[in-house]
Image (tube, rainbow, N blue to C red; front, top):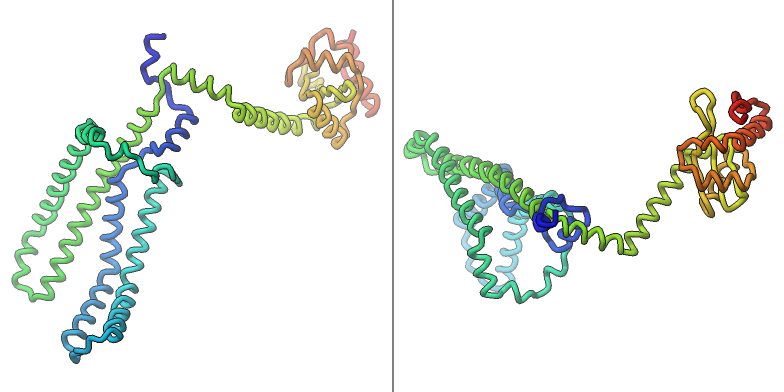
Length: 362
């Protein structure tokens, strides 16, 4: 109804999705990437951290316990700096590289490959004070604020519950030495952080689901938008050309499969070609399995020659069948006699008889 044209009740078309994607409108959760990187970073730190700690401990022992070096010339400092950087790089670069790959993979899994150079261009509207205040006090900003406060509460609850569950172990640290208590405390903090990261990951998955739902809702179209898009697409020469190309490809594929099964091809002789098939055991009447004009007619003739299908020239019959009978449809009753004559001729060439043809022709 016209009064409902302003309501977004229509599912978005593929064209609308592509246009939105070109403008950078995709369903993406920033929290999901942060949670994945936090969790992965903690796990990598748990696995690779002891090696890094051992290196830093050995370096500290060497600096504080070894012979003092008081030379501060540029060459000595650069050599020492290079040695420290190379040693740190062996442990730090794999961690940073893995986190970088994880960040790229997370974005690709969410939105796929998306390159938008237009977004890099300066846009004065982004620094407009009025629009900035509008975004600050918008419903979306309010929801993000509330969700952020909820995340803080979840983090506090998970951390409190984790530490409370190990309160006796924490209180017992006073009986341990400095080294043992430090290692034990780091282990407690690490596992508490992992639990927090898992909680944040679950919240991020909920946020991602919400972003997908919101994105689909925003992409929905009104009936008027749907009509305008269809009108624009119909008028697009590239779309029409692509549609015709697909139709030709489908027709050629269908023809290549149907013509070898035909009994005869009736031609005009070159402008039209109609392939006919008849199985007296399963068909009440012969059917047209393929037809075409111009280049398609030439293709039908070529396929027929390649597969040994007889080609018979009958101009009036070819014109009538091409004009009146659709593909996979039986021939009309008034054409029985002409088609039966052609089939009888073909069967005679093959040394066969067509059962019931004379009766039907009569």
